[in-house]
Length: 554
Image (spheres, rainbow, N blue to C red):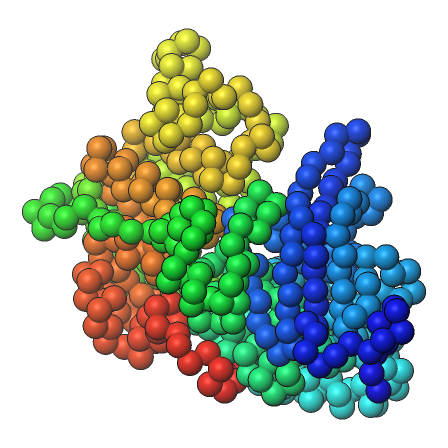
């Protein structure tokens, strides 16, 4: 049965599945209007994958949300444009008509599955609700279909997962559940909004492979939103490059990547972290070392809360980091990377020998370690979450100075803060502003300035680039390398982004389940990994060509 267009004619087989023409989106708040999207046009054919790429704030997600009219109306409006799906005009369609399209013909996967899934309901209820509302299935029929969907998306032992809550699943499993929910009604178009950004490289590869396999089996089209050009290169058929609310270039992926025409596209393609870390000096003094480091968390059960076992988050790790060099720590979520870093800084309890600049600190009390804190600093993953919204940038950066250099006057302290901000590439005259007034990349520079203002010897960098766009990532990597060279800094760099680690690290340790499975010079780890686990990490990060080759179960 053909779907009729508004004028009564049936859309032809050659017509695009989705056609967006001259779409504009404005947001009006308190009388102020922001032009978020301006005159955007693109088509998606049946069974085709089209990628919308660009940096944060480019208008990608706003464009995608407009397709299903999921923006916060009436503050959002469309000064121009039309969106046709199977010949039907969606922008002008009544809400009752849109409800038939949402979840049936067009579905959406969001970036963060934990916030998209209901934490109060088990997986069976969340998927079953979709089947009940859209297909009128009874409880038994919905359960059978749910099991089928979970098996389809690669969930191991799906029957045991029906009664699981979202927090009991890994990040990859939660994303698979979101995909199962999206596929429940066999949609014609799947909108995937950064579905792999928060995932480890191996899980990311599995999710992409899963989507490609399901697309091939079901013939659905995909609108894929991302800022990762590496994914676009191996996943999409066509690409649309967005910046400042406009599509500046679009075409087949191979054409755009091999022969980019617009300056912004060239900028994005050149934005991958590059360069080499400072040359390794085997004679440089050791700044940080640890022997047989262990962090075990007790598992307590029963009324008396007796210890019945331990989670071995870090189990017998040895490290050495020399002055002016970087040790990269890589591995999947839950491998113990961050726990290792926190233990080295004595921010959590641990067992084993820890030496910082010749001072053994593992046996010292909190008060005894305090004078050494200025020599060891940390930069966190999320700059917005780690900066107090109630303090100005000047107050944030000066906080450590008030504790460790109390002899400085207000004027002297302010001069030191201004110098630190200037060194990380920020205008010192902005220091009286608040974190929300800065971009993500600028906020991370503020976090780096806060660490560097005390002139530390050792800095732990915990995923400092994972929340940033690729071009901003490259800038932050260059900044960290420059600071290391000029100050002789020693870094512990924790990341699951192996491209960033390759640009910064002299040596690398690969962690899995709290233990080091491989370690050595970065060049050896990247070019000739010895263990199967490291090989899988490298393949996921650098060499995924056969995305559609079957489903990996998790």
